[in-house]
Length: 449
Image (tube, rainbow, N blue to C red; front, top):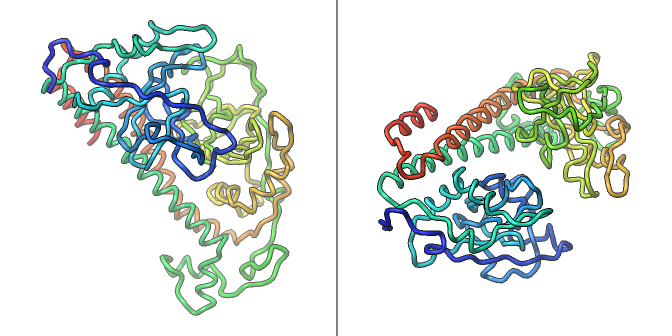
């Protein structure tokens, strides 16, 4: 174990392996996950909402496995948030590939604790060091020499115990996110089973009890099918168009001068509030203190839909999100539609949200997009799609089943935020002389209870 009082420099314990360019035409093909700037959170941490695979050549030295560390030595903005930012390949990534913007940290024979390196590079002290050594104007860079010159804290018993606390927090955060992913997948699977594949109807038609369904809910589904313009559907259900059930309104065309700091204006959902593939992205919220009208407000529990996208991959456009309870009243920007269910409709928010993500419905929606550089979704795209509409009772049964899941998911997101804030509060104390381990342990234990 290293015992240097001041701790070694990064250059004493790691070597850098630089990535290379790749061919964009091979993106999305089977292969390793690209670990470029888009895979690193601002100021450090792994980012998984914009990952792409690469089907081209990847030399062994460019490949990373779970637990490996990699860093960005550049930033394409002036914020320097990504300059020197570190990420650790998660267990969910079997193999990753460096790009021209990232370098791998090879620890080799030094045997310096990788976790201590990782958390040191997450400290505000290191982030400040990176910004103070930035070079360039339009694009910022950090030289290899300056990066490798940074001094690590010594790997003392107290320091490593503190790292264990940070790892415990990180593990709890990952567990909560994993639980949310399971709940989200379950809700999606149940919707598909009930309202796309019609599994309960097939089961009853064959004289079987629908799997995983209580008797009351099973009674809401018929035991035979009928023909319709979309193929077949459960008897008694009908084909409907979205225009019969929803109203879609475009949001506020805001001015940049009205953007405010958190707390100085109303929260404003925007294009960055919708995840690729659907779902709400908490990190995307903005705040606005300029003028707006009542029609530009959206309530918690209502649906927003992305109507703008760069390019034509349809990774974002047309996908929905449900505004979480964290934002009871907020604005929504012109890059979104607010979708409200008509009072005469048997739909519920949970049902409509899943319906908008059904491939057959999405195909009709994205068919109403146009534009060259910027792809735009016309309002008619949320009116013309046709689909099989179940009974009001079946919609309500689905909502009763999945709504508690949404409440759990939103609660877990807030717990993740609390733990993340605790982690960020503790990080500066990793520097020697600022450790208060018993106090830190007590705070962590309380937060994780």
